[in-house]
Length: 273
Ligand code: 2HA
Ligand code: ZN
Image 1 (cartoon, rainbow, N blue to C red):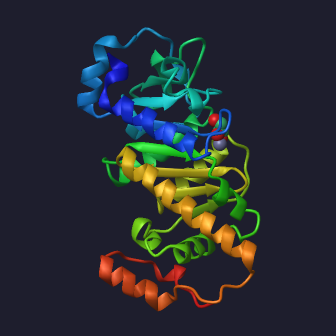
Image 2 (spheres, rainbow, N blue to C red):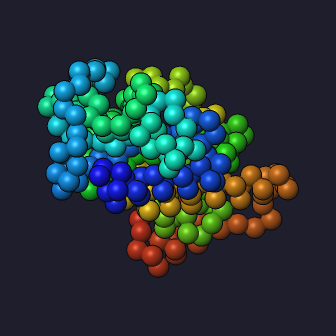
């Protein structure tokens, strides 16, 4: 039974955890997972391979023939665990990476997330960097969104401010975070802009909307989103108390953390204020 597969259970658990943290009001957010070949084999006999192909709107050549588990358009994360067959489904991409077809789930007239172009383009960029990447997660992270109204929408500023809020941040996301200005969600343009940031980062913030995280397994991808959002929550509290910090982590402190934890931090984030 497909729903009993461990990766499906982990997918549902991750979405439910995000819902419990308040990141998925109504139909907000979406999640996609690229199956391993062994997982495709394990579910293949239960798939329906007769549905029509639908254009994706973008070409993801290096994902041709891959299978994805995806949340449904207009569906609620709140119902991932009690109505999984309506809330999620599997898609297969054609060999050219231009079309997909539904092979399981999305019951009662469902279809994949409206952000499918962003998800697939992000997967395409990440697979080209490292084939171990499997997960793209979009959440309406309250505090990261709040910060897009008050901080300059620059990768350097968001990265540095989040790093300063928790010592573990530069260890958890040493490559930093990308930020893009407001754009129409679900569009091809936002898919290109997001995947462009994914060339450099595992986190991309959409101004006044939410956050994308990329990762290799469910725990680290969720943990990445959680860590960045927690840092943003601290920053919102700090800014609510005072526009100025009385003390903070300094550029040389970050270099010392980088040495101790053997990570590389780009000097462009360690500017003097
Ligand atoms: O699925 O989050 O960005 C609803 C959204 C669109
Ligand atoms: Zn969204």
